[in-house]
Image (cartoon, rainbow, N blue to C red; front, side):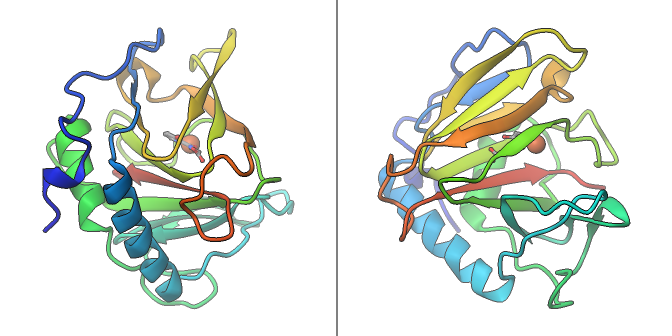
Length: 214
Ligand code: MD6
Ligand code: FE
């Protein structure tokens, strides 16, 4: 069991004000030691469930590579977006969600049930993620909690209904949540700032999003 001493001490009890109701940001929620421990667990999981490059339903490859942890994983292919219990290339079940992530969810998500899915996004310096909404989950009132490791990303977010977007940097160890009125916010990754962190061997960024898929 991971305990909260692995979180930065003290855990920021209240998130930074972001100006978008329901979008919460906890800069540096994970201490450098906790980031290194989590990264080691993530890399072990990725040996079981190797990162792969999905394609959009329209047939375009993502620039981000993906994998998943937990009972369910988010996948995209010609048939569409969905959650499934096995890796699309190996056919094997996804590995367990690392304990420190479950602890973060308990501490920060404000949701009674644990997550049943954790999407792992891997970015090299050229990868991006277009503006999207996370709406493939059964209960769209449950939050999505995001943990960033490695190079800093320029995250873009705007209200669900449209209008202006703003950009927020997500650095290694930062945690953010889309909840309440921001649960269906449009968001994406404009770019990754190569060389901004030395955490991930060989560089790059890993983002972990915890969800309630079912
Ligand atoms: C990323 N994040 O940070 C992409 N989704 O690489 C997301 O798509 C995301 O940060 C839902 C909630 C929070 C997120
Ligand atoms: Fe998302």
